[in-house]
Amino acid sequence: MPTRGGVWDGTIACVEGSSHWCVYPGSAWTSTAATSLGLPISGLIGSIYHIVLKETSPALKAVQVAATSTVTMATVGAVFGLTTCFSAQIREKPEDPLNYFIGGCTSGMVFGVRTHSFTTGAGACAGLGILAAVIKMSKNEGWKFAPPPGL
Image (cartoon, rainbow, N blue to C red; front, side):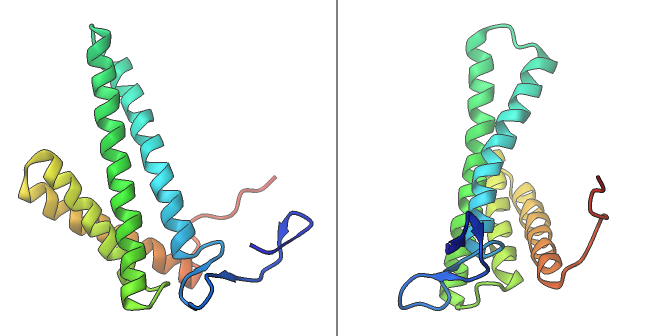
């Protein structure tokens, strides 16, 4: 990204020869990268709470619980990121909320596969798909859900 004195100067850096592979703050690439990195961290934090609250006796069981939750959330983040970016590339509409719905839906299906339940997968597909699309629409249209923090 072009910078001026360490601060982003507002110009957009694009992959050569393609107008829809632009990387800038808030783009499909940066949003999905943040999601793909944030979900494993949230899985690890959830694992820590699970281990502390349930007090798993053998240490091996605690490691297994932590690994299972973290890997599941990392997989969900990766599926969301890849699906959203592939959908944006195929449809050639990088900022369309439908890309985020498709990514959220496919990542919800991962939960269904993980639990071996069609009902869980369908519910998570609808829920995560709608949530991702609404979040993208709110960013596109500048919706404010809370006032900015005051200092």
